[in-house]
Image (cartoon, rainbow, N blue to C red; front, side, top):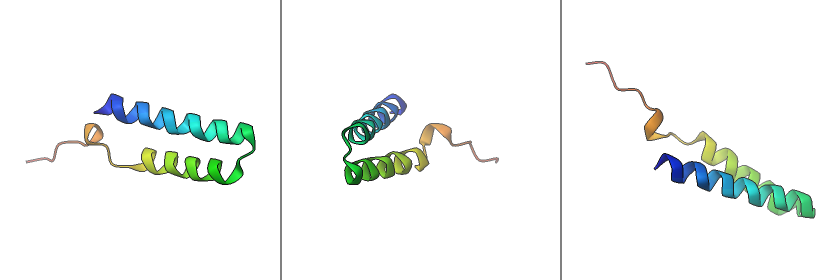
Length: 52
């Protein structure tokens, strides 16, 4: 699950970088926003167990 999530973030980041390089401002803004959302998500592998 973690690898899939990180791979998807890398893919979307690639789209954002390509859009930047091609001067597609609106698309780049959208993709960078998506990257920020994905990075901000709660990730099950980062949660700490609750104290009993």
